[in-house]
Image (cartoon, rainbow, N blue to C red; front, side, top):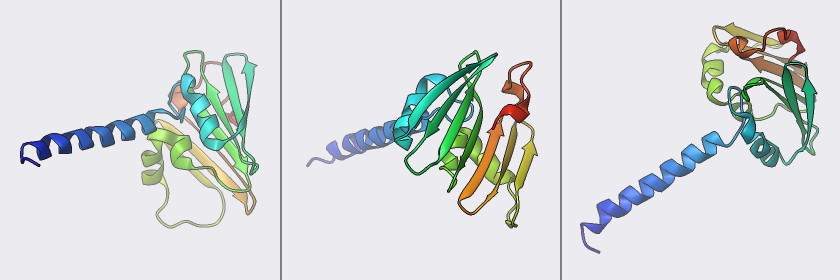
Length: 155
């Protein structure tokens, strides 16, 4: 191999890795994401999905074979403004919260105590709770909640 081949091949590999990372990050309709990618969540969860149209928003409810239910609340503009979950175990919160996951982790207490977790910071509200085999929670972006909708309905 010539030495001029290695830098070019390294660039191709780096480009391929970057493409895979970017595509995997954008294919989930996590909090703040686009409605058009919810099917990717359904596939990832290997879940059944039903869609419920409400006044001013749509709910995509997915349930997997393990009994985990994830609901994604979508505004008329096609953005996921809220998510909720319930089941015997917590879903992959990094997937569900998407780009808000890091903010969630920074805002969560470093020392976890028993009981519910309530986080309310500018731009993000997350509440989790439950007990073994019956965990639940929800998260939403206050600024994106459609007018006339009560954030308490994100369940």
